[in-house]
Image 1 (cartoon, rainbow, N blue to C red):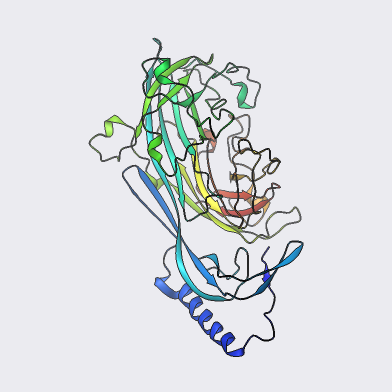
Image 2: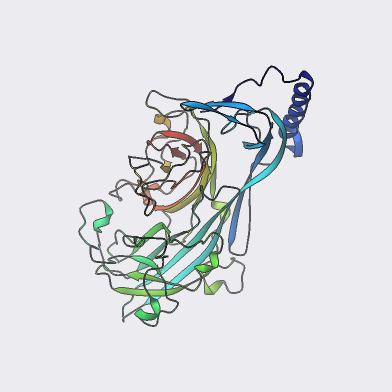
Length: 440
């Protein structure tokens, strides 16, 4: 809800008000017409990174005593306050509808730092795998809104046991129930020589209480023993500040019984033109990535739409050449409930978001955003995938302004691997649909 400021006291002088209005008008003109209407979105990259930058406006609002109405009461404030606007947007600030005095630019940037792992057989087996990993990074957002410890990956393995149907796949499968059964994990070690040098699962035991890798793995294999996987894991390490923390650790593929069957080192991805490209999987082609600006849509009778937020999402397919139906996305959104802590945050003891689609961020099958019917349901191949792969993909926290960053990776199935023109939805804490944008 947009909060409004009551009128200042009757003793406020007329001349300062006129001056403020003139400055505000000039600032608005600069925002809407200045810099040639600089682009909302551009992509750039170098080495093993790819970057998306979104231009937003950081707005200085008037330093006056003011009464802010909202929630169950009101409070007095007196300070310089900043708010942010999309280029070309109306002056409906996240927290306050202030009089504008001046403006400046601020970038919200999304970047991925890529790594790869190619594993070879252990223990006389035949299993091999290739995996693309990345560390998501955001700048221009608050620390509270941004998960800084995430590693995401998409990959596949071959020569596994045939026709596996995992107990974690949501269907009638009973396999992979052993510890580490069908698992794919980053391990703490830096050599594949033996189990001691491979180490255990890689996460910070000082900050994470439950093993985040425990149930991460492939959910099925075909008749030839081919399996694929996609996931994002919170490690407890500040990877956003130092992505190189991931480099050198080993990636392990486990068999159905939990045994370690394939291992390889994690190395930085190489540009496709690099002379050392044969040593690693190349950086994904960002030209194939899709983006959407997520905005509110008309409210319906079911509690969907009608908000005031916005955001941007980047959807990344073809991260792994062997997994055509693996997709990852990262983005940010505003206009959400402030100070949310999801029940999915390790050690939070929170009940927030613990409802169907609560705090969810999902690719939907529909071709439009105007209504729930046009948006459709979650986009995945129901003939080949038993359970909704996007069910628990969500933002973890929001800051005091109701802003959140998010990231996720899923396998959507071969019958649902065309993400062009699909609707991307951001949900509320209660699971209602708040924001929508079409991927293009």
